[in-house]
Image (cartoon, rainbow, N blue to C red; front, side, top):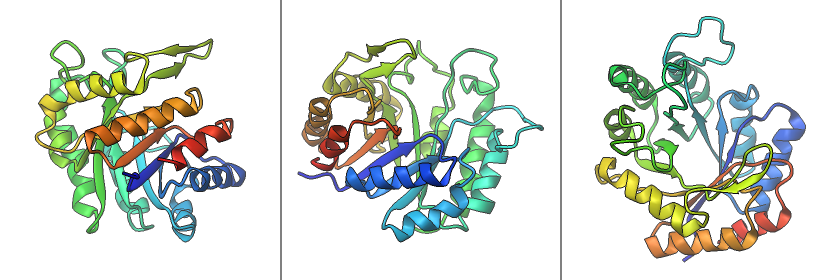
Length: 258
């Protein structure tokens, strides 16, 4: 069964040419939705341009958990929520994906702390309460984070309660900067199985939609296998992280074929 929605994720749209490149890639891949990180300063105005091209627009962010008074990109979670409410939703934003993660304890974006439950609830509520009908709120995070021995203190219950969809980052290839390595079992099927096993206990019956990535360093055959895995799971929405100028055209065509 063809995917009913395809979402192309983007890190930063920093120029007119980059925005045009994202739009071109999304169209080539048959994606009806783009998900842009909120650090993209063109984002508020770009929403209307993507809408005019027939594409929905989501936003995403891994926000800080402590105030960042000198931030110019609304990095702290409550500043981020205010930006979404004041600038993006009025511009027509169609959805928001929260990305609570933790690389190391004590960092300014370390969500793996039980003390952050109230912050998570307020962050989600501010966005959800301002959202119009049809707005999609979701949560993404690491493929195998929600485990008793792997980031168990991220406020999963608060994020899940606010979410209509859950998006484990079931990437099977990763560019380290020095080389491309296999991760999460090294195949779309293994990575999806790992993510679903980790996320099901915290999902509260919310739909789990495994993400593909990193799409610039996977093969077209692997993207086809990802689509087959989604079909076997009965999932009709594909998420593809992340758009870069050097994505092989064959990969875009493979996404289009799903």
